[in-house]
Amino acid sequence: MTSPLSLRVAIVGAGPAGIYAGNILTTAVVGAGGTVAIDLFDSLPSPYGLIRYGVAPDHPRIKGIVNSLHEMLDAGTTRFIGNVDVGRDIDLAELHERYDAVILATGAIRDAVLDIPGIDLPGSYGAADFVAWYDGHPDVPREWPLDKAEVAVIGNGNVALDVARVLAKHAVDLRPTEIADNVLAGLEASAVTDVHVFGRRGPGDIKFTPIELRELGEVPDVDIIVHDEDFADADPAKAPNNQLKVMLRILNGWRTRKSTGAARRLHLHFYHAPAEVLGDGRVEAVRFERTTPVGDGTVRGTGEFREIAVQQVYRAVGYYGSSVVGAPFDDRAGVVTNVEGRVVDEAARPIPGLYATGWIKRGPVGLIGHTKSDAMETIAHLVADAEAGALPAPVAPGDVLDLLDEREVEYTTWSGWLALDAHERALGAAHVHTRERVKVVPREEQVEISRAGSLTLS
Image (cartoon, rainbow, N blue to C red; front, top):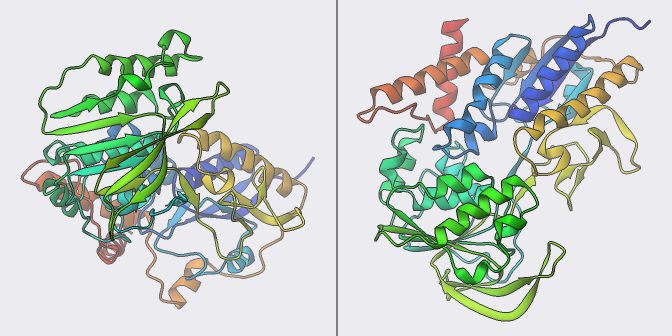
C-alpha cells in the first residue's frame, strides 16, 4: 500500500481552469488521506480570469459561476498570488525548484488570425481586444473609438453575439451591471446605429447557445433583421438536436417581426465568407463571397461576391492560446504541447512535473462547464505520476513569497482581493445609478487597494 501523498503544487492562471484544477487536486489528495499545498499565480491583480475579463457585463447568470469559484478559493486550501507574471517576475524553472508539480492554466486571450486582404486597415479590430475593453481589463486603452455608424462583426459564436449585443445595446441598459465608468461613458457617446453579424455557414450551423440568441432579441430599442434567402435549409423539424431546434425557431420567428423603428438595428447575415476588407486608408466596406451548403456540414463558395458598407470590423473567429516562457508551445494549434494534460517535449516525452489544463491544453473550444471535466483528466495524470514517484522533488528552500519580496514584486493575495471586491461593490452602491459594482480599471489602483486591504484584513 502506497503512503498518502504530500504535495506542493503551483498553478499558473487563476481563471476557472486553474481554480477547478486546484479544487479537484485537493479533493483527490486529501480524500485519500494526503496533504496538498497549492499556490495559484496570476498575472492580473484579481482572480477569475475570463469570468471577470471575458464575459459581457450584462451576463449575470454566467457570472454566477464566480460564487462557486469564490467558495473554492475562500476555503483556504489554495493560496492566491496575483500580479505575478511567470516568465518575468519568476521563471518557470524557479517554480519547478519549489514545487512538486506545475500546472499551466493560462488560457487564451489573443484573437485568432483572419487571413484576408485589408484585415489590418485602421478600423479593423480583434473581438478579444474589444471584450477586454468593455470588461475593464487593466492592460488595454481606457477609450475605444465608437465613432462610426455601421459596424461588421465576423463570426458565428457566442463571442460574436456578445460583441454585437454590446455594440447595439443602449448604454442606459448597462448601467445596473458592473461595467466600468470609462466604458459606460464610451458607450453613452457611441455613434453606432447598425451592427451586421456575418457567418460563413447557415443558421443550421451556428455556434451560439439558445440563451445567448434569445437575449439578442430582447435588447430594448434594437430591431433584429434577418434575410429570407438564408433560411432555405433552416427547418427546426430537421434539426439534429433540441438546442439547435430551439435556436432555429427563434431565428425563424424573427423573419416575421415587423420593424419597430428602433434607433438601432442588428442584422444577421448567413452564408457570407469574408474575402477582403476594403478601404482607402481605413475600413470602408467588407467584400464577402456568398456560400452554399455542401451537405456534410461544410460550405463552398458560389462565386457571387457582395460588398457591404461598414466603417469598422470586428473579427470574432476564435481565440489563440497564451504561451508561457519556458514551456513547449504548438504555434499551429495555439496550445502548450501536451498529451492529455501532460506537457511533452519535442520528442513527445512527458516533462516531469509539468501539466496543462483548460484552453491552453485543448484550445479555445467548449463552454466553461467543459473546463471541469478537462481538469479532472489532467489531475488524474498528475496524481498517478505522484503515486508512481515520477515527480521531481522540490530543491529550493523557503516560501516563494520570500523570493517575490526580495525582488520587490507587488503581489496581491486573497485577502487583498476581498478588499478590492468590497471596494468595487461600495462604489456601485454609492453610484447615482445603483450598480452591482463599479470595476476599478487601472492596475496600479487595483494593486494599491488590494495590498492595503490585505494588511488590514490580515
